Length: 118
Image 1 (tube, rainbow, N blue to C red):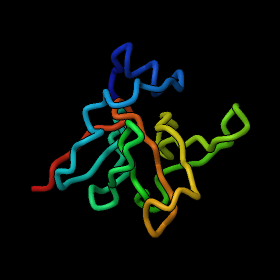
Image 2 (image 1 turned 90 degrees about the vertical axis):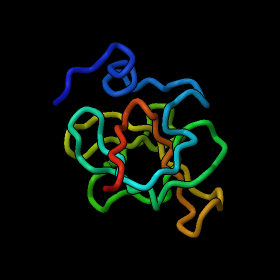
Image 3 (image 1 turned 30 degrees about the vertical axis):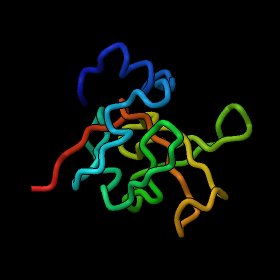
C-alpha cells in the first residue's frame, strides 16, 4: 500500500469526489491499464474507457472481479471500491446508453494510476 497525499486520502479513504474536469485521466486515451492508486491492483483497461463528458474518467466495464459495488449512503447511487484494498473509486450509473454495456463507471482520477502499454 502506498502512502497517500492529503488529496488522495480525501478521495480514497474519506470517499470524496474530485472536482469535475480536473482529473489527470479525464481526457486521456492512451493505451494501457488503470490500477488502484493505493494497492496497484489492475482495475480497468484503456479499451473500456470512453468519453461521457461527465467530467471524470468513464469506463463501461472493469476487469472481472476487481471492483466491489455497495449502495451509496445517498440511497440513489452505487458506490464502487477496489476489491483488493477497499479504496473508494467512484460510482456506477446505468441506463444512460453511452455504450452497449449501458454502464458507466465514473471514477476519480486520484483513485487511479495509469500504466502505459509497453
